[in-house]
Structure formats: structure tokens, C-alpha cells
Image (cartoon, rainbow, N blue to C red; front, side, top):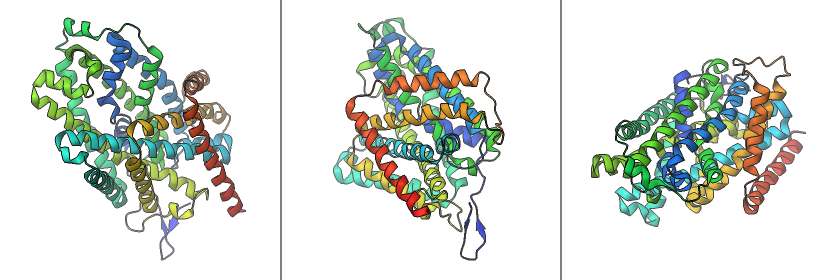
Length: 430
């Protein structure tokens, strides 16, 4: 349902995101702040076997990715998981998935904003003070919001630039570190009681975010062909980078589990003080790149839901000049900033992981349902799709079963508020 400008002519979103820009968006959406803290935590849980844990988690989450690849290749409209489950299970379930997806992204953005401030404070200590923290978060969100309101081409170029910039220091660590592995350093990584389940849970959170790249299908060129390509190539790249970074860290950084900045510390072991600076800057670039992608994708969920009158219709307005959902972008940024200012990294990141599991499992289930539809021909057909979908569903249910009562209650409250909004929207439509 395209919007109209004041003269009554239709104003439509422009398809400006190509295959490689979409692939970059997948990589950028996953490689955020997690890769810069993950190596220490995983090493502390499984020690020298941490690279194996990284690959196991990557293989497990890839079942979900493959389901997204087939389901996403059936659609050309904005919405991502919200659209997929709406078509498979009806408007009520679709709304809840869209609602959970929005909250996952908002909570993730809040967590990432806190990481941005923490690492920037290492270089500029004043940023850690309350007033400068407020200024830094506000300025950061303000800039990415401006970029995205100005146009999807500018936003896509910014995502591409940040994706390349964040990968360069990681590639530097991989190239230098993998060829500098030392047996005596590997020996310092031993742990007495490996915690495999905890390590896999942590890594699944680190692998999350790929699903948001497919939300911009209405602004992607040939989404039925390019969605599956971007997901598979992008997540394959992420898994390879994660595994090699983990190997490099435990091979050059003694007692890696004790470091809160493993990538920067590992580069410091290889390059001296300059490596620490490079590592810190890499985190800042990576986090800011993630925020740019967040401001590109999440408003399109709000836009898609507003198009169907499930949220205020003003969120579906398209700017007559820039042809972007400018009101959705502004609201999205304002809420994320508020959550970032009043929440901590741990609180927001944990809740983001919990909300994500629900729509991962439902999207896997959507593959089974949508295969019965003759009107939604996929651009990518997944061999053994039903078996892989059932595997993905079981994996998500297992992870949800590990959550504590407080997290479960938070999830239930979010769902209940979403249900109330759904009922109100239905009453207004009728």
C-alpha cells in the first residue's frame, strides 16, 4: 500500500539495495559488539576447545538461517519474520512476531549504545561521565537517524563502509594471530569443568541479528533471488570469521578468559600499544556500523505493520523527497535511545536474546506451512527443508527452556502488551 504525497501521486519505497549490499547488511547485523567480548567468555567456559564451540553454535544456528533463506525468498515486501509468520499463521501471530522483533532490535540497540560509550571511554575518559554519556548516545543515534532519513542509498553505503571497516582489524588479528599460535599459550587456556551448554547459549546470542537484514525486502533489488544468497554467504562469512578470531585469541593471548577486551589485548600482544588502540577503535567502528544497520532495518518493521493498520498509520508515512519511512525511523531511534540511557548492557542484551528465540522458532515452522501455498513460489528451495525446520524449532525450544523465571515473565509481559495493542487495532479497523 504505497503512500501519496500532497498532490495525490504515489510515493513508493525505492529498490536500491543490491545483492552485495544486502550481504553486507547480514554481516553487519551479526558482527556487532559481541565478537569483541565473546572470545574471553567462551574461553572461560570451554577453554582450548572454544573454536570448536564457535563452529558448533554456527552450525546449529545455520539451520534457522536456512529456513529464513527459503521463507524469505517467497516475498518481495518489507517485514521479514513478521510478514512470513503473518502469511503462515494469520494476522494475530504475525503481529506478535513483529512486536517481538521490534523489541529485540530496540533492546539490542540499547545494549550496543552502552558498549559504544564503554569503549569510547577507554580512549576519551570523559565520555564515561553522566553528562557526556548522554551527549555521546544522543549524538550517535542522531547521526545514524539523519543518514537513514536522507535515503536508503546513503544508509546502504554507510552499512557497506562500516562492514568493511569493522572487518579489517579482525582480519588483521586473524592473519597475524593464526600464524603466531604458541603451544605454551594454548596451555594456559585450560578449564577444569567445561560448560558447553552455557558456551553454546552465549554464542547463539552472538550469531543473532541476521534476520533483520531481510526486513528491507521492499527496498531490495530482486529479493526473491538475493535474500537466500545474502543470508547463506553472509552467515558463512560470519562463522568463518568468528572461528578464526577465537583461534587467534587463544593462541596469542595468555589466560584469555581474564581479559575484558580480548581482541584489543590480542592485537596488543602482536603489535604492542598500537594494537590496543586499533582494537579499541575497531569496537567503536563496529558498534556504530551496527547502529546504522539497526536504523535502516527496524523502522521497516514498523512501516510494514502500520501499512496493515496494526500500528498507528502515521508510522507508514513515506517522506515525499527522500522516500523513506521517516516517522518510523524517528520513533525507532527515540525509543532505542531511551532504553540505552536507562538500561545496562547486561539487562538489555539478555532480554533481547529471550525475545529473539520465539520468532526464530515460528519462522522455522512457517517454512512447513508455506510449502503448502502454491501462490508463494520460492526463489530458493531448501533440500530436506521440513527436517531442517523441525531441527530449528527444537533448537529454539531447548534454548527457551534454559531461561529463568524473571526472563520468562518479561517475555510474557511484552507479549501481553502486544496482544492488547492488537485488540485495540482490530477494534479501530472494525
